[in-house]
Length: 337
Ligand code: FES
Image (spheres, rainbow, N blue to C red):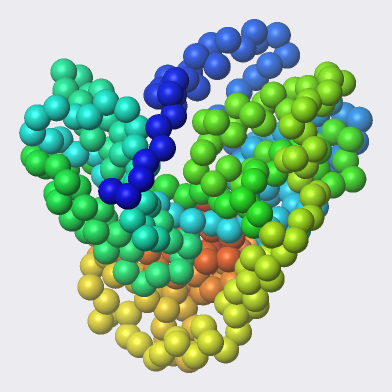
């Protein structure tokens, strides 16, 4: 190790328990939680109207905190980049270290922390970050994370594994504050994986604005800021979106036979002259879907670790059968049966 920085007075807490406590603190007098409800659009006004798949909701102010804002008046499609990280929860022999660690070797970053689990503690090891939907073999990231864990700890078992998706802002700072040209709609996104900290910061900035209080950090995080540091990355992200529409990707779709697929395999292929995203799910059923993401028509990619179709442009994710899991797309992948 060449160097390390230590931050004192860090807090580590359980996100779900934290959320449940917040929900418990809601007074219920005009405050509601609507679960399993997908917001589809917003009409700005006084009041604003949120259109959902289960009805309309009116509110004086609306805060969009949906990872990628589905209501995009600020060109977020060119200012946010999706990334996927991999996490293992491992049982180890001996004492699980206290504290949270962030380790960087070259371009590889890993974070390590403990997680109480009944009588024991598990070690959470996170890493293997890559742009969502942009690699062909995602299983390799779990493998590499496990190799890292076994190199540094006496691993007894790998109990759980999952991958996460976050969005980086092109200039590295979250976008928090009023949406472009709106008095009542707010945005909070681009947390870059630091959701508990930046979510809390967002709540402070947005609450202050709604209540007419001055907030010392508001200007720094304004969603409509443009700074030179972000312009280059914005151009790269925009070029990538165009590339995903065009020849480079279309030419790699070769004729194929869905019956050749192994269980759990997915591929872009030309079937009977039509381009299709084809996979064989765990039960052996073959799905043939449109290759185009319903958000802005980029071409989806098979994620062999999660068995999903992932969009490289803005991170929409779909089940093997095409059902939407994660926006900004608002619809399923179309079937081309
Ligand atoms: S998520 Fe935007 S095109 Fe797919």
